[in-house]
Length: 106
Image (cartoon, rainbow, N blue to C red):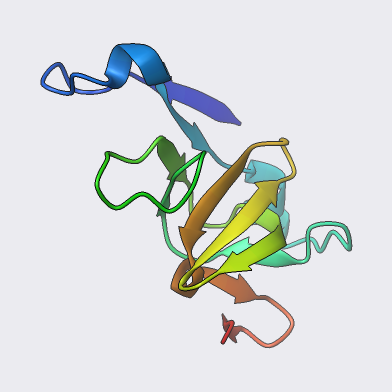
């Protein structure tokens, strides 16, 4: 499920970036299913940055806890992930876990 949330009105760059997007995957969350193509899980709600781990700008959106993802690239403490819905973004690596080991990835 994808929901769109507007940026706050005090964000001068919001118009260029468009609306914030929150991605969740109710099927994965409720059924506890495992998708081999998307083997990892966002275990706590995680803000993401579309073009890179930019601490100086507001996040582009949020991955909901339980969203199944695959890791595309590791960049320091941030990982570029892709959700089953096709959304990609950089998230803090501590927000990603491996359901097989039930823990955060190193």
